[in-house]
Every structure is written in structure tokens, then in C-alpha cells.
Image (tube, rainbow over all chains, first blue to last red):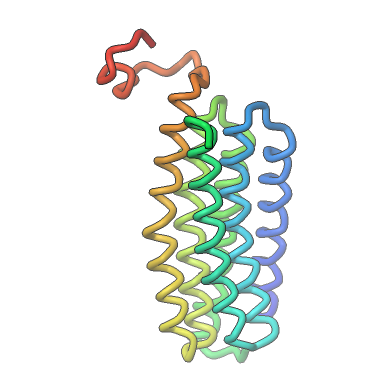
Amino acid sequence: MVELLIYAAATLIGIAFLLALFRFFKGPSAADRVVAFDVLTIIAITVIIFIALAEGRGIYLDVALVYGLLSFLGVIVVARYLERGL
Amino acid sequence: MTDTPLGILGGILLVAGAAFLLLGSLGLVRMPDLYNRIQAGTKATTLGTLLTLAGAACLQPAWGLKLLLIGMFILLTNPISSQVLARAAHRMGIVKSQQTVVDHLAEDTGEKS
């Protein structure tokens, strides 16, 4: 029962990842791509948590935390660049 | 991963969080302009991630503190990144949808929208 629910959630997240990837490649402007990238990083954090659940290893949660920090900084820097240049 | 009541609650929370992530991505594809896409892509995914974290905490109660830390972090950083993105898009001059009726930032800076 629980494993079935976890598989269903993982499938939904896979579809969500593909939809965000579609917006990332379609654009049309650079800001649209950055928004899609922001959503993709949030989905990636969730995927890392699913991997930690599947493997049963809590050390992967540290990876999720550090990834969230770095991707947040990346989005901020790219937005600043789009706003007024480096 | 046993079928305890707490485990089943965790599984249901995981599915709910994944559904909110899917709705956020669907909004990202279907919304008409950039500002609406930011709206869909930030709020729905924040809620989806928080629900997923809660579900994982129900399945593995020993990870609760670390999952709470990740949740606090997401709750702090997601609004900041979306606000910075929206301001950058506004200053870049991204065109708004035809159905937009009010633009407070343009009114405050005194430009014609």
C-alpha cells in the first residue's frame, strides 16, 4: 500500500518535471527560462528526498539542503544579471 | 515502509505534494504571460514541496529535524527568488497579458504601462 503510493507520487513528479522542462526549452524570453529553472530546482529537491526514501539513507537530505542553497543563489544571480547586467 | 497508519498518512501526503507540484508545472505551461507563470510556479510548488517533506517525515520519523530545516529554508527562499524574478522581468519590459488590469509598480515609478 505505502509502496504503491510512493510509486504514484514519483510518477506525478516525473510528469511535472517534463512539463517544466517543456517551458524551459520553449521560452520564449530568457526570464521564462529562469522561472522554469526555478521550478525545476524545487522539483529536483523533491526528487532527492524521494531517492533518500527509496534508499533509506538520511545522508542524502544534506545533499538536498546544499542543492537548495546553491540553486537559490543561482536564480538570484541570473535575475540580477537580467535586470541590469553584471 | 510498513503499513502502519502513520506510514499510510505519509504516503497520502506524498501523493498530495506530488499532485501540487504537477499542478504548478501545468500552470507554468498553460498560463498566458510571465507574471502569471511566476504566480503558478512559486506558490503551488512551495506547498507541494512542504507536503512532500511532511510525508517523508511521517515515513521516516528519525529524519524529522533535518526535513523541518529543509522546509524552513524553502519557505524562506522561494518568495525571495520569485520577487527578484518578477522585478527583473518588469524592468526588462516583458509585455503583460491583455487581461492585466492593474500594475502598481508602474504606477509607483510613474511610467506609462
